[in-house]
Image (cartoon, rainbow, N blue to C red; front, top):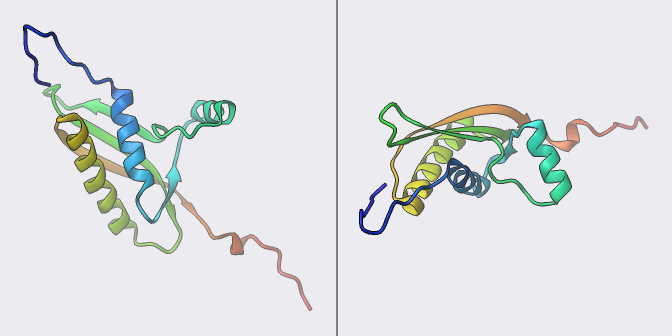
Length: 127
């Protein structure tokens, strides 16, 4: 964070970083969604707004300067998990750094679930 003493300081809250990362992930093909907490689910249900920060955790590294971002994704069935995860890491790092001018030390992807196709759950009728 660059500061000019005569103007004051600029602080970017972790929630802003979480939202930037969540929006970036929402644009990646092969990711069905993010795993949010129960509280985040209630918040989304009551407000009717998508919570882009759900499933994203942010903290600073040991130096307190760079961000470490954890993504808890739900992946689409039948996609290459490693390719989609690597794409998520690239896109999130790029977007956060471009928008905030702050460095990202790591983007950790945790595949929390898989979205199975509806066809697996459809009742088969016998003729």
